Length: 279
Image (tube, rainbow, N blue to C red):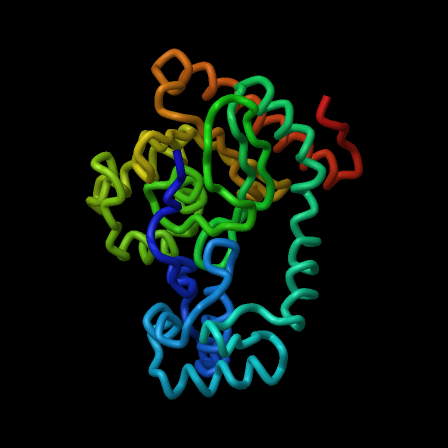
């Protein structure tokens, strides 16, 4: 069973930010190109970059050449594709240092995976969607293609839906304005129905994916809050549909909610100088 991963990556349309007086459009276009590269799509051709970033070939080539000279990108003449260069590596490591709580929350993820017997993931908000920063895979039979570092950017995914549920209304409405692709027969595409599901996720602190993103795969997600009450991360339990019947769903949901609450309490304790380990 292989996880499809949702729709084709775009250059950050899901972040919902509004352009202001100090917005530099040329810089934004260059950054939109860099934002395309991730673990699922590490290499891009000129044509694919133009289509995904929504820019002309002339503009794209000039920006790509600049990024290549500054070593943010490398060009392979044999494949005619670009990939990230050496100058991008320090930025990646620095960015990971800002999500250090992924390391301190690792014991909680391991306990959650052991209690549910399923794969557990932790994701934080990123450019264009939610970024998976840690994962504990199940030892049970379940073959998935879900690499750490991938971007979740469709509302069929329970993790991304939970992130969007707690976004400011302006950003949330902008994301709702993007047509949702029907990935499976269970995918919800009606904006009004999706909006109601976002309200429910915010009210209950739980979001489900019942074979909505990938056939045969189910998930349940819950938010982890920081000291200021904002969502720091979303933790998700992922499993095959045959292990997500009503009884298993209730059990995993209860275990997940308790684990997310403990993570929230732990982060609050760390912020005030207290806190304990994941025991």
